[in-house]
Length: 178
Length: 151
Image (cartoon, rainbow over all chains, first blue to last red; front, side, top):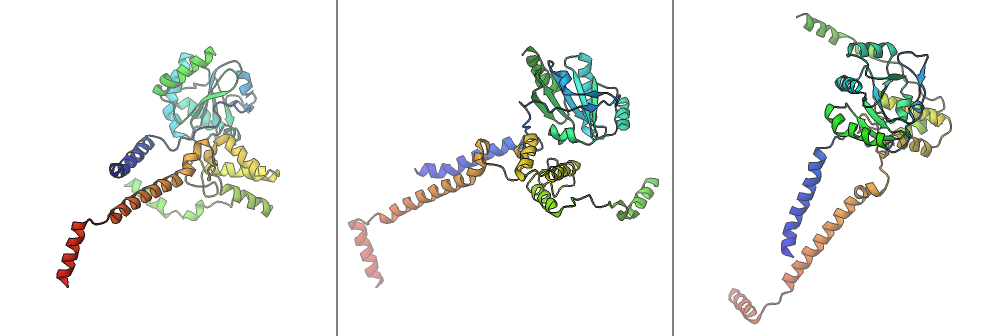
């Protein structure tokens, strides 16, 4: 009994320290998205390369695809850009983009100066309305959408080569086989 | 040298030049009250320790506009909150709802209080036992002797 009283605080401390240690390695800015497992919001937005034409996620039904939200003013997008360019070269998964709260001119210039355009198409969300539907709060954000148009994975923040090879591409393969 | 000069000149810039026109508010004061009430209940996702009402982040501004528009369409508080929760999750709420995943958050303090109370009761009980132990004959004689000596 007495031993328990003495050990009690120590045990409590160890449990608390355990929780804090785990908490230290978590990124508090990463908010779990309630959209994972739900259908991707529908939209129809003008294309960046030709504002007369539009793109809608409906066109992608039957395919697994990546939807990347980016902007010319976004610093982390710069970091992510080479990774996306590499990904586009492999043709592993169709990559579409959404230029979020940006101007057409700035975005096109950014793509030119940034080493190229990894996207099959990008659409323009100048007001950020579609961004709200997707729960965008920190660009870049990337959504992996399955054949039925359901969001299966979301990454907030830049995609790294490691994340791509360890998480995203294996998941793409699995979803393509579904 | 030239850089410093530019820097000093920039410091001399009257900051009032950067001031903007007041952001558009709803004309209907009743509506503005609703928007304000909602935006103090909702979290800005960019600067997470601020409410939408406090935050100057562009996203917070967009969300306030969105809330204002929905409110103008006659949507209730609950409808607007549901709309945002569907997009940003429970995280957007400043007061998390009681759910399976948040039980520990809500019950945790009471659980700790309970553990403390149990500990307190256990300690008090063991203390009572010490007091309750009666003296044996030898001890009481010793006590009587000592007391006699004193007087």
